[in-house]
Structure formats: C-alpha cells, structure tokens
Length: 296
Length: 296
Image 1 (tube, rainbow over the protein chains, first blue to last red):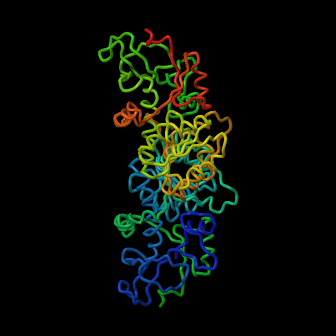
Image 2 (image 1 turned 180 degrees about the horizontal axis):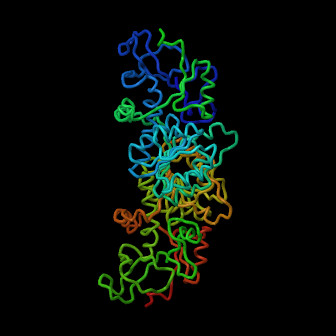
Image 3 (image 1 turned 30 degrees about the vertical axis):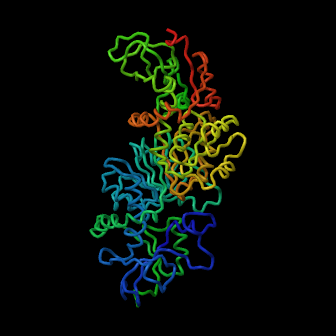
C-alpha cells in the first residue's frame, strides 16, 4: 500500500483537487494486491491488481476499478512507485512541461523521493545536467553515486541559494518542484531565460500552521519569461501507455533504478505517512499489509 | 513619442530584460515621425516611420532601424499604441498564452490602458465574458459604455477580492496581468481549473521601495493546475504580420476602439512618464514633440 504526500491535503477541510478524507471512513489510497477469489470475468484468482481501496487488508470489489498488473516486468510493488503514479508524475512533469533538451540544466527538489529520483534519471537519459536536493548526507550520496546526478546537496546542511549557485553555474532551465518555500524562491532566482517550472508538490508547506508567503522574487517570472505550470497526475492518465512503453523497459533492464522504504503492518501506516512528510523515506514509501493474500 | 511602463525598470541598476538607461545618454523609446530629408533608397522625404530613437525631436539615422508606417490605415500615432507594441502585446498575451474560448471569463487589470483596452476588446470578439479593473470612475464607465466590458470596477474604491467575486460568478479562466500585488493574489484566488495567467506587467511594484511579497496563495497554481507565463513583446515580433492582418482592419473599421492621452512638448515627457505610472493616462500615453517634422 502506498502513502503519498498528496494525502496530506486530504486531511484539511479546505477545497483542494481531491475531496477531503471523512472521519470514520477508511482512507483511500493506492494499493497492490492479489485476487483471492473471483466471480468476475476479467480477473482470476492469483491475478495481481492495483486499486484505490487501501488503507485496508482485504476488500470485495467490482472488477471495474481494479487494474491488472503485469508482474513479469518488475516486482508488483513498482506499480505504486517507479511504474505507478509517482513514475508517471515524473514522466509527465519532466517531458510535457519541462520539455528538456540535451545540455540543459534540470534541478529537482526532494530528488531521492519516488518522483524526484525518476525525474533526475530521465533527465540524465535526455542528456541534461541534473542537480538534486535531498534531506540527508546518505540521500545525497545515493544521488551522486547510484543515480549519476551531476550535483546534489543536503538542504538541511547548506543554504539552498549558495548550493544552487555552485551546482548550476549556467543557471537552471527546468525546475521540477516538489517542495516549495525557500526552494522555489532560490530556484526562481537562478532560472534562465525561457525556463520552465513543473509545479508538482509543495511538501514544505503542507504542515504549515502560519499562512505561507509567496516567492518574493515572483517578478522573475516576467523578467525571464518563465513558464510555471501546476499539474496533478490524475489529469494525465492518457499518458500511461507512452509512459509504460518508455519507462517499463528502463526499469526491467535496470537502467532506471529505484528504492523503496517498506514499513510492515497496517497499524504502522500512520507513522509511515508522518515519516514520509518529514523525509524518513528513501525512494517510494510503502506499507506491507499482512497477513495478506500473498500468504493465502 | 511613446512613454511605456517597461521604461521604469530601465531606471534601476538591477539586471532586467533590457539594459538600464545610462545617465547622460538620451533615453530610448518608441517614436513616430516623418522623414524630412533622405539619402536612403528605401525611405523618401515625407514618409512616416517608427523608430526606437525618441526621446528627441530630430535625428539622423541609417534607414535600417526605421520601420515605414502605412498612414492610410489609421492615424500614425496608432503605430505606438493600438497598432504598435501595446496592441501586439495584448494580441500575443491573450491569444498565444490565454488561448481564449467562447464563454470563458477573462479578467484584465489596468483595463483602460493601451494594452488592457485591446485585451478586453479582442476577448469580447472571441465571445468571452470580460471583466476589467481601472483606477477611476471615468475609466470604469469607459470600459462599460464604450468598450462593452461585461463588468468593471475601480480598484481604488472597492476591495479587489470582493469586486472579483461579484464580477466573476463563474471564476476566471484567463487573467491578463498588468499590475501585480493585490490584483495577482485576488485573481489567483478565483482562477478556475486549468486557468491561464499571461504575465505582462507588474506596474504596482515598479516604484516599490520595500521588497515586494509574493502571492501568499501561490499553491493555487498547483491546486488548480494553472499555467503562468511571463512574456516580453520583443520576443514575439514574428507575430507582427498576423497581428496587423487581424487587428488593422478592426481599428480601421472602428470595431476596435482606442484612446490616447497626448502631452505636448518633450520638456513634459518626464511628467508624462511619471503620470503614466500613477494612472493619469487614459489609453495610450503619448508625448507630441514639436515643432516637429509635421510642421516642416
């Protein structure tokens, strides 16, 4: 089962792009599982499926809202991460909004996360210089040593403005934004003419108790003729076939790497979710539900 | 001769999209004049031309940087306004960024200005609901009575947030931004899903002595999947032929109306410019240089 940053906004009463969770009802979210019994024509016992029914260990469902997973391409857990919504999010934001060209500089925040790590690797495959921020020395090492980032820094240890100055000597052409706040302001200050900002998440602000302030250097958007575009992945499911055709083989061949942080037991899902918001995950944060159908 | 808001940013030392003016050198700017003598093959005495040589009453120039004006379409002064850079700015920002569709709501700030008045009228011709803000009761009446806006308000008299709530019951699909600050924040709060913001100017901030604050509701860009795009008209001169072909006949036939505020004498150009920044103009702000070639 997946825990994802967007769930945080469903815990507010304010209008957002998905309805708020209701107290007393099970939380919704992506989950992968195996069919234990079926009276449905298109799904058989033993099939692996992706659903939006988690957080729960079992459910009875009409087959309509279940998507069968091909478990031979990669482990089924990847359907919640690198080959699921986070991977698709990276793909759409980078390609459709960022439109990277070889030689350009791409900066991605929360770069070791489920989305950011795919953004960086896809941008490298496009021939871009790739710079990432992450929240620990271990994550930074992972970006540099395993994911082949050109530069990376720990935003908890260094000033983002200084680090970006060093890491992006030719400025930033594409900023893939997962964080908001100081990150956004510092990135805007270094964007090149005609730069693109794919606005995917603002995780630094989700738990804010004071009204956030906007980027004080907002006029940079005009001066440098920037494009800023907010996007939500559920608007872009038409891109799933292209995404799986392009990224599936990269994952299967090991050219595109991913990590998962797996927490055991639905009783630990709340702490997994809270940990996600403070960056305790490394790559995709998952909760293993059990004893589940894999043992059945 | 034209005075334009973008000139204000050339009076700062900060890096912007055009070089700063240099003390002791004549100010540059658009101007229309008549050739009094020519040794150039492509221009003859009596021809009307558009240049970037103003603020000055006469000059000697190579013909290369002069553009001949067809004075039979409309008065030559329109080459600095409705058929010049401001008109082109309106055309490009509305069509290329805003991409208006019939039935959508378009909000334009500084709506009675040289750019805003063209934005509103072109959007009406596209079948949009058009809402404008302006800085006096007289300007608001002009928008409603002469330019056929659906709604308009005086932002000096009413709260922008309240006025937009009343004027845009179905939200805003396109915001053409000339002003910034409170206008931007209030517009973001009412933007519809997939709305577009054409970021043309931020005139409210040009004279700011304190660091401006960014829009506190910036996360709306993500929640409502907005597109924000800054643009500078000099990047879009390739659109001049389309613009003149479409807007020229509208001006010639009187379907697209324009106003000019004309100040007499180059000695009054500084006060014309200062007046422009505080909204003393009505439509395009011009300075008539004299005794100029029209009397020659």
